Length: 354
Ligand SMILES: Nc1ncnc2c1ncn2[C@@H]1O[C@H](COP(=O)(O)OP(=O)(O)O)[C@@H](O)[C@H]1O
Image 1 (cartoon, rainbow, N blue to C red):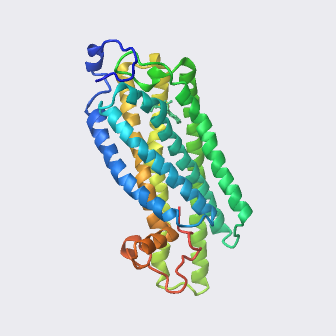
Image 2 (image 1 turned 90 degrees about the vertical axis):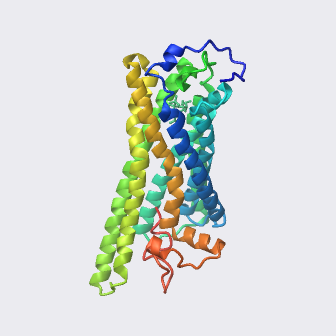
Image 3 (image 1 turned 30 degrees about the horizontal axis):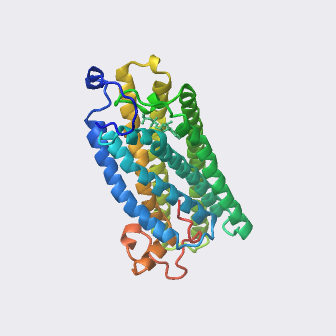
């Protein structure tokens, strides 16, 4: 390992690093770097495609504004993966690993909570659109949503910035953890940020569940009304099935990607800031649990473009137009063919979006 940063490092304590408590096992140095490299390659391609598509769709709805924010957050998150790969596989210099603790990991978490917050806002917007389908928007409301987006980015940046600034101690050995680089105030702030982020996550999860429960209820009662009125026909049944399974898909992604991480984060943060309460094997266990569930959270940056494709009609339409494909392409995959009359779902263009 080269020391290219000018930090004064003490000789490596091989007894410690070779002990069963060392983080440098095959999971951290091989398995996750390979998994993050895959995420990086696939995520960059899919999110690059999503940027290409979304930025030719004008921001004419709250929904599109929120989706664009998620795309930007996902691209930034994806760009942090190579740093994590190099750092975890021990291929990075000490300076690069310090950079990972100070900057790229913080950016990773920042973008993750940006996505979570915008997912919550999207659910509220979809719910409003389903319950009040004829209430449109106007230029003033669109500007408010853009302002809200700016406020969310700035607030999370302000919350995260001290995690960069207070990670200011120099490493004393080539084997260090991010928490070793934090001042006492830095460790306290790290704990506070993690509590705030838990509140953000669980608050948004409740919002998503409540909104999708209301959407599902409204969709089923509107179909029941349509059937009673004699307008229901054989063709509509598959659409109802597809809308409800789409709703389930969004919830499933939210649960798989984020719930495990937020359970494992609590004991891990405690092991970082109140180290004396835990023996080294327990600390290692919580670290590995946090790393495994963090990969699931990172997987969200890859699943988001798939969600846009499967659930967002305007995304699909623009994508097919850009690739010069027929509008009905992949209807076997999406389960939704072109509507011969209106080309839209019963609740409007983006009603089946997350
Ligand atoms: N929710 C968060 N928001 C912003 N920054 C965070 C958050 N959680 C952790 N960080 C910062 O990211 C860096 C890496 O944190 P962490 O993953 O806990 O460390 P480690 O990589 O040693 O397990 C640290 O500087 C930490 O303060």
